[in-house]
Length: 224
Image 1 (cartoon, rainbow, N blue to C red):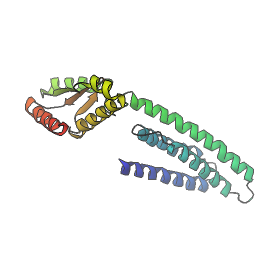
Image 2 (image 1 turned 45 degrees about the horizontal axis):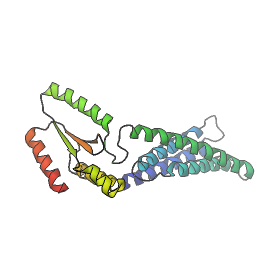
Image 3 (image 1 turned 120 degrees about the vertical axis):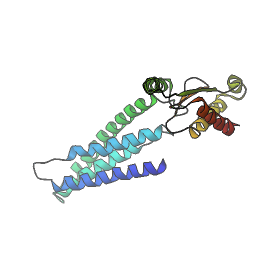
Image 4 (image 1 turned 180 degrees about the horizontal axis):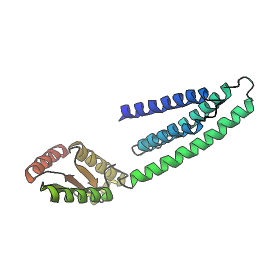
């Protein structure tokens, strides 16, 4: 995941450099590429939203917004430098930075709301809505193809007692540990969801009772 994020961020930097070069090349003509600076800002906002789903909020879109504003202003000033007013340069960097920062935060908020509407905030697993949609789709697919599917329901024994005796932080840790076990020992085609406090459900597409038993044994072995 970290490697993917690195390459995505590198792509954002390359986008800014390319747009700046092209913007400088067409300066003074009838063409304007300035609006393209919004693209790396939007891409950075998406990266920041994805990262914040897993850890504390990031300032990725803000940093990229400021860099984009600076690159835009430099390309603009370079055309007529050194006669370009320094105050105008500073003002353009400021106003564009503010605009891009606001744009990035709005996009990041929309993206996070989209993700959180289908993901469990604590564990990152599918939530009840996401599971229901996938279950209904698998049911339709099973009826058409005649292939079976399996459902596995899991909860944590004495979870309320765990919370009462040791506090909700310990309970949250237990939920995260279990979610990691379920995700790490299921297949890429499976759906792992948290549908209640300590209630989890796994959907195994095109899986008969025998294969489901193997998967259950693997999960139980790791959990023990």
